Amino acid sequence: MQRYKKIAVILLKILILIFTFGYIYNTLSNEEALFKFNKLFELINIKGFNFSIILILLFAIANQIVEAIKWKYATRSIEKVSLSNALASVFSGISIGIFTPNNLGEYGGKILYLKDHNRGAGIVINFITSISQLIITLSVGLLAFLFYFSKYISSETIVLNILTYTIVVFICLLIHLFININRLSFYADKIKWLSKIKKYTRVFDLFHSKQILVILLFAFIRYSIFSTQYLLIINYVDPSLGISNIIMMTSLIFLAQSILPSFAITEIMMRGSVAAFFFEQLSSDVLPIVASAFSIWILNVILPAIIGSYFVLKANFLGARN
Image (cartoon, rainbow, N blue to C red):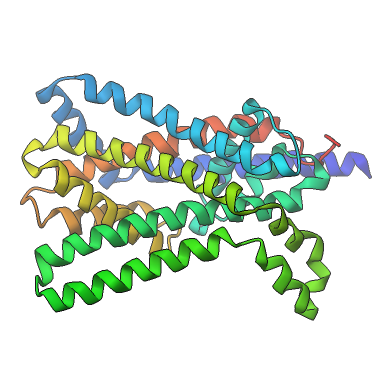
């Protein structure tokens, strides 16, 4: 029986690699992607390789390290995870999540480096850390929408006041609910059909307001890193847009991407369309901007997914690390 399990695990790993590299090949080999690559290389040849490019590359590394530290901190209540294993979890999650709708495969990838009996709890913890990132994205994006609304839609005082009040209340309510996420286990105990998964809902009990605030802080740092990458590359491509405008439009892009459902096949088209929609209000030539945004996605998703394939192969799917 053990032998058959090992064979099944090997086949599963091969299947994951086929899907991961198949998605990467399909993404990078299509005409649109190749055209963006050419445009980006043209811009680099014209403008030169400057300090902004170096910073973008360094931030790409920092992005994964911060996510690993966040994962290490979040899982400390169930298991002591080393930074190297936390990094392996992050890369594995990206590698498996890349070809699944809305990165759902990340849940399975991230728990591979936890002990077998902690993997169920690990899924709940990954849900919490994912929600923290979503809350930061929604909060910053909605605040950016306020500025966008006043600039491009309406500047009437009454309308702006109502919109500001609504957004601020919504953000405060969202953060308040998240900070008190440990109450979910209390309510889950009251629902009969949830009693079957009580050992998983009880994981919420481990997260009190202080821990949640720290997780939110990590999420905000990661968001800031990602935003700075976009700011640097777009400002490098077209400095005339203005830093404040780039920050506003980038925040709106992240907001739209977090709300819209994404599927592996359409994700790259969606990202390009969203970037073009917002930046065409600032520039008549959005192709260089879309191409530069595409390069950030390559750095933060495609390259980590390739690295993650190694950690997927290395992971013990049978969970013998008890």
